[in-house]
Image 1 (cartoon, rainbow, N blue to C red):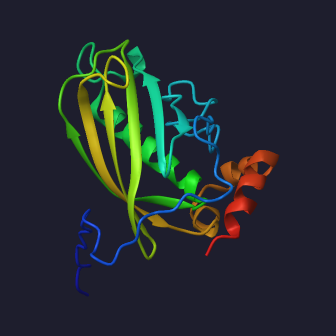
Image 2 (image 1 turned 30 degrees about the vertical axis):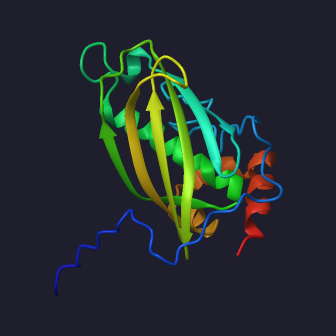
Length: 197
């Protein structure tokens, strides 16, 4: 038996990629998107040590978000853990899918750590979907300190892959799936997304 080949996906969209479009029923610019799942480490309000990242719809296919770095998020003494910063970027990028009414998962995430992020600081994030090709959605994000005009301290480029609800039903743990499916808001959101090609 031969070992599976490693497939590396580029973050450069192909020449025939299209510009992503905002869904007509997407939240209005400035509207808070809310959590997609209460136990999500990135945005869930029920996750005690999570980021509690709050994302807002922007213009076009863009979002803004922020989170405050707490002591539970540190790596080096007094500084945010790089994995936590990557999670904040990933969560913000994933929020773009709400504006396209598309269910998608992270296929690739490439992160640049530019400067340290101290505990107690608030990271301001901006993300934008830049291209779409087949099931792939290409996007980019930056994180700034001291407000939306502050210095860039982290950035990321990513490629998300569109999936159907069955992706989660087939791969998640039954108890969490049942809890999510008993939440009327989760069921409503899932149904809204099922109508997409």
